[in-house]
Length: 238
Image (tube, rainbow, N blue to C red; front, side):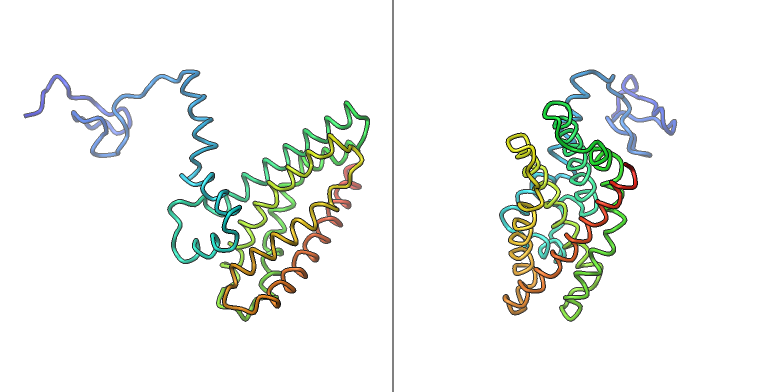
């Protein structure tokens, strides 16, 4: 028999009960007061348990590129970060980090262009989101005869480009050692190699050397397109 002294009223829907959660709306009867330790826990949780899979997804992108994306399409999704949120988070991290790097280079090394820093801070994420359908379409044109449709190849691109964003952060840090370094000369070979491996693993039912050649064309086109558009945006905001 329920203890009437323990009956609580839900502040959200007004129903009563004796459990921890309202049986009608599912909200907790008691709400903890917000504290600094609670906020720090939320921040830690944000970066370690995004959809219960940010860290796991990143590990799979490093250890099993291509296999991870194919497994996601085949239904293994509960442990993975959702593709667009993965893309948005990685793009945002890359944009903010590169903005901080460029502003630091300008302030302490007197190297760089303030317009480039503003591009990373205000335009980079928006530009890449706008270009996502085009990235996917370019890849689809080369693999339209495969068993994957446009949307599925879009998933492949979302996860792959997400990893590229994180790679770009690591490469950009080299500018603190060599301030005049043009990171594009390092980014392009790294992206070509990683993308080739990813596509071979993803399209594992196709001839490997053909996949590698198509991957090379895709990377070259998209990388060149990004470089041109970035330069145009920087000149526009200068």
